[in-house]
Amino acid sequence: MQKDECIYVAGHDGMVGSAVVRALVARGYERVIGRPIDQLDLRNTTRVRDFFDAERPKYVIFAAARVGGIQANMNHPAEFLHDNLMMQCNVIHQALLHEVRKLCFLGSSCIYPRDCPQPMREEYLLTGPLEPTNEGYAIAKIAGLKMVEYYRRQYGLSGVSLMPCNLYGTNDHFDLENAHVLSALVRRFVDAVDDRANAVTVWGTGSARREFMHVDDAARAVLFAMEGYDAPEMLNVGWGEDVSIKELAETVAGIAGFTGNLEWDRTKPDGMPRKCMDVSRMRALGFAPRITLREGIERTIREYRALKVARAEI
Image (cartoon, rainbow, N blue to C red; front, top):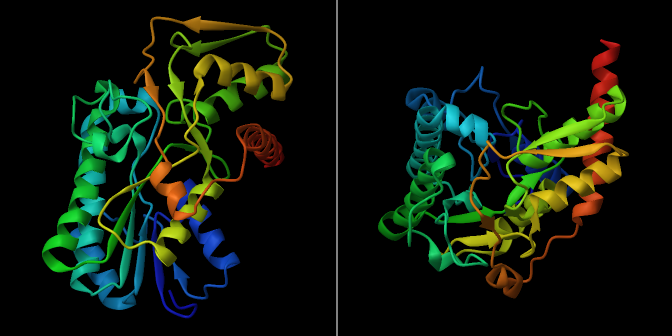
């Protein structure tokens, strides 16, 4: 990518998109653009076409998505399917029509079967049923990576797809209904410390295992792919290591300074039993994350505490 050429980051104000923007700017890219939803609703085909007509980006990084935790996915499966399908189809198609030089599509580890062999290799895609609690989102993401694959095969679109593990970090939101598990735990335990609560209730049994990567490492992976990877095969991106939700909760509680009781609401779903990525292909290409889980949790707690202070001052 040339430093002075236009790079469009779809979803630039979200957690992943904003991390990508920070990484691009830090690397010296001069024309990084994005549009908030009130200026460009990516579900609107005409608006997306008009945007591409006007801006003519040379590179596109698709980090836009309707995302959320288990509760949000269970409550709104239709929206998770429809909104994500519309956004990615519009952007990928216009990238082709406007002769974008390269596109990077960001998916999710939830695309793999619920009972997928562990660690999950790229070739395990579509080998079994999906996890029901986030099936709508997963189907949309599978459609997106397949669209990139087929547009490359049929039309020659230079597109790559990255499948990161569970992401967290800077610019995440802490809304308990829509937040991902790590951010939700940070809020619960920090609030419990501040409120001097004696107990915190966590969903499920704690036995489910997840892999976590800080969003700044995901942004580094995007730049790595945009600058040096051009192949039809999707790439898993992560640490290749997982922890149980119980271990994660105990770690977050300890770093936050919570000394009360952890109570598990076993009436709530655990979701997919385990999600651990096989990242051997990614590592063979020369990429590895840097921010350890403990360091990332410490950063996230500091950021949430700063957010609480800022809100209190308004």
